[in-house]
Length: 171
Image 1 (cartoon, rainbow, N blue to C red):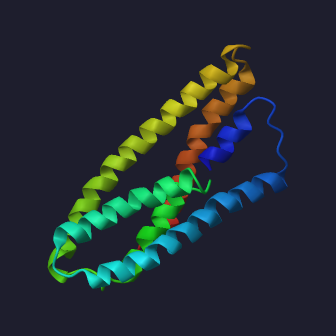
Image 2 (image 1 turned 180 degrees about the horizontal axis):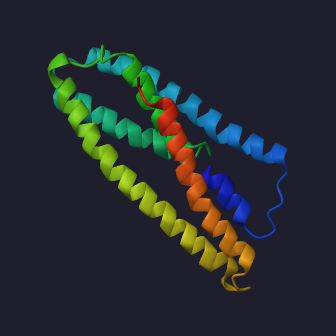
């Protein structure tokens, strides 16, 4: 959603509703497919490793970053959606691939990582939005339309996140 708004804010951006829908489908659907494509071999690998916490926890960490990188750079899909689907497929396995003694350690590790990444992601998103406003409209001045887009962007993004959290919150 952020990428769609960012594309729309750029000068001379005139995309039709169909083009926006295709871009959203490519980003979200491609990220979902990429996450699943990485998760299935990871599950096979984790089933072969037993009682080695460093490999089990480290491989989920490294592969999560690999999924994000491959999604964002070479594939051009949403890396965040790819990592989320990767994690959901691993979680859907109900930890069958992980040694039971290390499951609590893995949950604690990922809780800390998710808190840190959330803070970094939202700080980075705000920084990028401000930089784009300065760069794209610095030469021509910032008009009322630009300020309105900037003021509308953040509440819409936070509202979309709130809706996602409420809808996907476990019962």
